Image 1 (cartoon, rainbow, N blue to C red):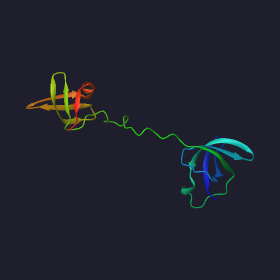
Image 2 (image 1 turned 135 degrees about the horizontal axis):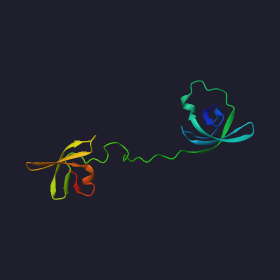
Image 3 (image 1 turned 120 degrees about the horizontal axis):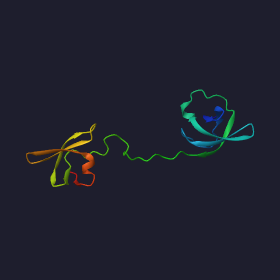
Image 4 (image 1 turned 60 degrees about the vertical axis):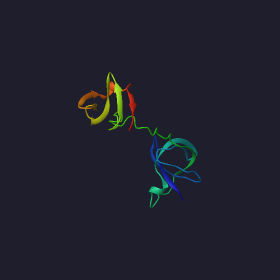
Length: 129
């Protein structure tokens, strides 16, 4: 028998999964002693070697929403890639260095170099090499 651990307002309850497919953090509705309760799956059947006896059963599953796969919240994600060509404010050149902790980008054109805040390049014309 497949058993899952579900967190409810009363603590963790072991429930029979039945024909349902569950994943960690799925919202489920369970039946325990003829009462229906919402809960969150914390332990899935494949995580258990010796499952305990279930005290209830899953009657409905609402899979968790998949997170946005974007990386906009990752530190440094706003930085330009090395080698990118940029044009802004009369400066046209190639990104040759990044200072991620300080949010700075170094742009080189010929023998001249400029270190600029990446925020100054938000609206710059960009072309990746």
